[in-house]
Length: 88
Image (cartoon, rainbow, N blue to C red; front, side, top):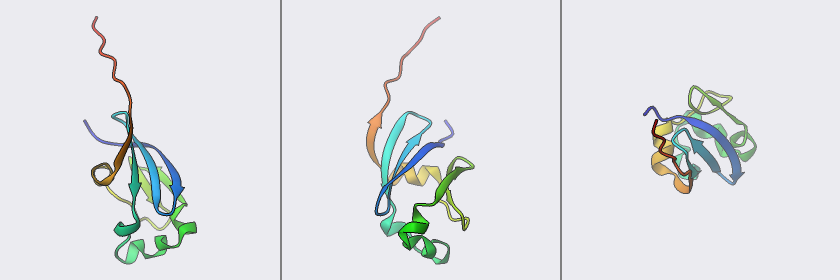
């Protein structure tokens, strides 16, 4: 399965609640991940809060983003949806 971010909600500080297309929701804390020139502006929390979902992940106005697989890996599970197996 190709992993995608389908919903993202700012929580507080540098934490975002992310819902993935596999039904799992994870809280991701990006405080320690904001390294490098492109992420420097995001250390300002007002800038950090201003993200959107583009191309299957979260992205900021300056073009900074993280791979959805990386967000999934570092996130802490907050919810898993129940999958219903259907047979025909």
